[in-house]
Image (tube, rainbow, N blue to C red):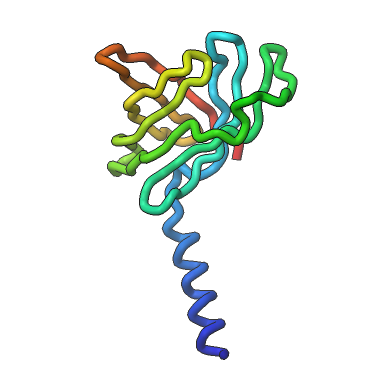
Length: 129
């Protein structure tokens, strides 16, 4: 039993050491409707996903959005050097899904995406935690 507990502790420490620096909660910029939100980014198997955890209205007040709990980012892969690609980002304000790229720079995350050859900046998100 002691060997199993030791192995479990080592596995837990190793997994936290391998956590990607993008993991955490990120605050989006205001969308076309003036709303913004907090996205919790974490592992989804071998890929990276992000879920809308908290929504804010244009005045900055928390409100219950029908999009709370929905995936905003999925299938993203780390390319190294703070770059991420190969995934999708859903923009609820336009109800469009973009082939996206993310770029991590300290406490900011630059979001860019394209759909049908039309590209758009998702702005620069800031780390909440």
